[in-house]
Image 1 (tube, helix red, strand yellow):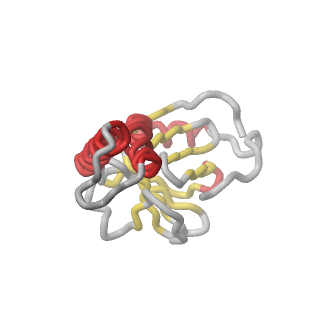
Image 2: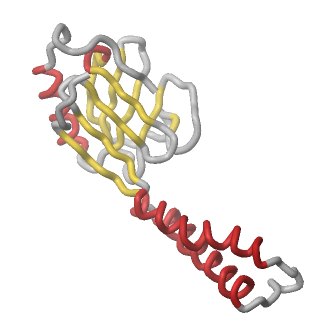
Length: 181
């Protein structure tokens, strides 16, 4: 694999999703409520006498770790000279070598009926979409028939970066193979 930096890079933050933001705010407020109300002031949680250590064990991850993770969670798409790399920020990473990509096309229609969305967990499928904030993207078809949709706020720019880089790609110079998620 080529060690040079990416030719193209796009970052999509999960904090741009309203439901994700709402859950983070509610969880953070509840965590700090537990820390202060039960942990510091020693009051019971309604009729539930929650021990201080348990309130801190629940409250600290919710009140402190959740906002830290929320601020850093993002999907990163990078086009290198020999491959496309997508890291969705949670559980999935795909490295798609240009030598195995047979077709690239821009998709601006609703992809939810066509693809299994890959945000959390593992899934074995022939049509996966890596998206965060948009239904638009670039659809890649591999030589084994699998298809990947890489979500992008600017699918035309991503398509141009992939197409130009693929034109300049020389398989005999690139390292053989690559990881497919």
